[in-house]
Image 1 (cartoon, one colour):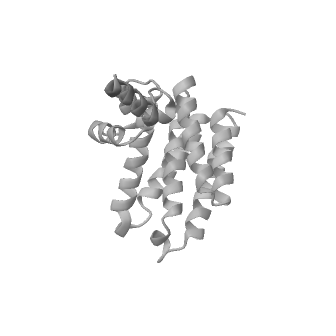
Image 2 (cartoon, rainbow, N blue to C red):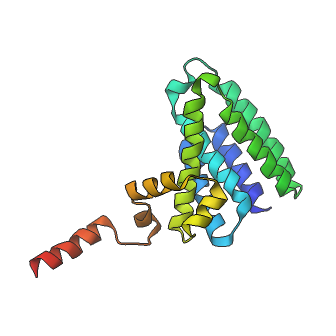
Image 3 (cartoon, helix red, strand yellow):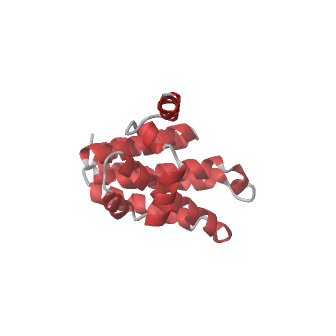
Length: 183
């Protein structure tokens, strides 16, 4: 079983259980695998899992529409992608995942701003994570299609490098600063 196939299976499982944490974890693991092993086929699952988790947790979004109907159609499309990946056709499975992202964009005309913003955030988060894991900023932007200003702004507002382990934690920084001041 290929990594794309496994990611799709994990997304189906998390979606069926309405497991927001599982979807976020899948997004992060796909990005890690993409960064470490250059598994470019895992970008779509990373973006899609993040976007689905965000849509799932926004309960106000579902007041006037059926969450079950939407996630049933997403699940059917994911199963189609899973079959394609199982058959070894990663390109077709990735294309099906792109169709799912398009479905999210068309979820509701009145909410397009929310959904487009959501997908943009998914791309920004993905680019930021790849950058934190060692990709050049240019390469991370190229892979994800994220906007440079948005990514730089996001990186500046997060402690992403602390979580990835590239720099010192805030506590370590404060401790070092106190040592400097007391000398």
